[in-house]
Length: 118
Image (cartoon, rainbow, N blue to C red):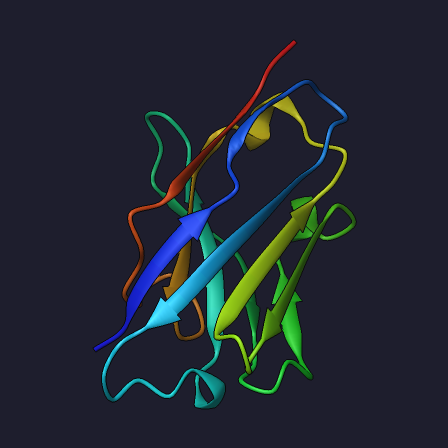
């Protein structure tokens, strides 16, 4: 079973940048063979899928509203995921989670909070 731990969240002003990280571990979990995703949940809203990346990092899909601003990457040797978020907006304020698999249904970590405000 996989364990995921996110880090790197914080508070920024609109237009700022944040890079989130996620570290995967777990007996029997082969990180390099699994697609992975980032999802988020804003206050009072449901879980929203942001982006997914294949196991080898060669193909990904990203939510249209963040496509030009967010970039997901992975380091299979280190079992890490990254989410580079640029030109952040107030509406990006949310708890951010990395998730196992493609989409928003997989096991998630405890999350890291990102707050964008002026």
